Length: 184
Image (cartoon, rainbow, N blue to C red):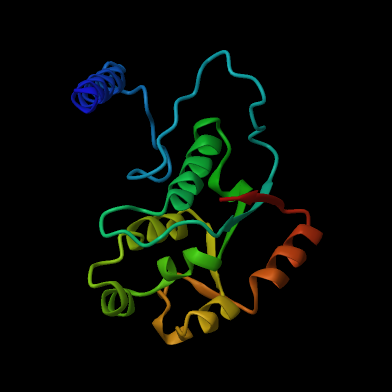
């Protein structure tokens, strides 16, 4: 009986959260630069807004996530959200110097369609968001050492992604160049 009550409570909670999201008026969530990912809402009273006149440098360190058949890596969606946040606040894409380094357990998201399909038996759900990030000017890289650790080769990497010498060297070099480190 307790399990039945818990299931009813869970279903009710899910219905309430879904209806709360649906209750937002049209146009509440915007995606000004990357239209399929990273929705944002800009509250008129929000503080700490970026200046459209400044340039912002960030290195997104993507290490988390297991490949799933139908899910984009959450780190990539958050990077799209960061791009959309700055653009929604009036910062031109040309003022965003955003780089991504993929390594560790997230490494397989960097594979091209053929390699991903061979390894996991389904399409890579990350290809579209990676292409959209690249179109927005985001430089996406994968760690060469992580490729080797997982027995992948540079030939198996998505052509929208560059192979870095190492995530370790990229993290050090770019932080020395003033990039803010954002762990995903």
